[in-house]
Image (cartoon, one colour):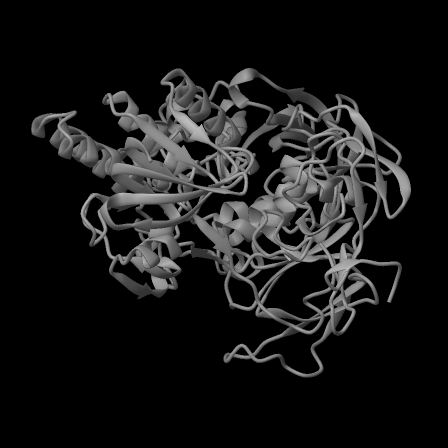
Length: 529
Length: 104
């Protein structure tokens, strides 16, 4: 039997972070993962993360994954892939299936960081080829480089549904619609807005009732639902799609903890059956810990911190760090965790409906029901500066934990403050230099650079752009409004890219001045670029 | 179906193009990509037919959990094609029930 001081199960964000923390303290660590590649779901997350600098905000998940792997390698952490942990037994003995052979390991402590699995909803035809998890589509396009389908219906408007819809567009797929049975958009308004402004309809109070097709999906039937989530006859719409993606939430993969005999609880707010944990993530079995989505569905950012807390606690128990160092680490990590867990979408606020922001602004009804802000509702928010010349418009209207815009502005125009869930404000005494960094850096793609004095009767709108082909200066097309409807002709006058914006371009388009407050996306003319 | 250019991802780190046999026909895919990916790139969506009702099944979870995408690979049934890397010379067959076959 092989011995290690710490066995980590799962090489995702939480498991790798835990292993790194433990190895840095001097512990001998092994990480098992049933997959052929490490990193868990991080390498599929090609969007920029939210949070603050300490949470690696504005960094794409895939880069965070690369950094974690590099660090683990530097520290000489033993990561064993294609290794399925079968069970955790008495005295922290762990059985692992490696290449059709069961091997036994023993450790002083175990961290279970097995993550989560996608939920599904059954409907007529849901077993046809072409119906798949949104995560499956993400794996196909972002890992394998294959489009899962040509035209897609996305079921679910949580962050996964919204982010994957955007990524489907980036991969060159068409998204016919995003639907959600709930009467409100489930995910961040900014994630919804960046999809709806491209012209994708978002229908709340709609569900999928049938996937039609002989050998694979040929169309999807959706219908409006009543307050009890029952389809209303006569409201059916048939959409010609070849793929239906299901994004209806995740469930913790907590079977290992359950089978090991850890005390479990059913917590709907955490996504299902989860182990009962101490402050540091210890289960009811001494020195068996859980961290990340297995302990309750959250974001990768909090999973990483949970991994570190568990590892630090183990390092203290095994004598690798003293009580003082542990207390310092614990305080810092707990603070970081509470920052990212704050705001309207915090884990504890699941299912709650907010009508006002913390600052007292009325949340846009249009944003919650259609996925985009209406101009009249937006005008109540503070990050609108109607001053002449070049200025920014920040369309960030919910309390979400994120503040890179504040850090990146060289002129100090943007104020979020220390509470990173605050809605950004503009410092009217500072002058925007027009650098566009905030436009390219905002993880929610919610900042626009507006110049109302470009030339007589015309102004420009600078917007974040992450699609191919990248338009070029001189290209003509239509400016789309927040709902994705064309509002006027537009000409590209500049396309700005730089390293800090990490592949997000700022596309600057010229539009008539009266459309400056509505034009938010550029669609190249057919046959053009 | 292959993504030729992507605005964010520069390189999918694919192996070289290799030949393999799909239902007796010589076809191509990249070594190291999942068998399912190589098949999807060719337009294949049906991986198997169920035993009793002969209903088609394809990729559903793409991470090796659901077993909907299993096929007969190198003569072995129930191979999860979404997590099995493609190798040169592999034989991949549509699975009917629990074994390879030539139709319903």
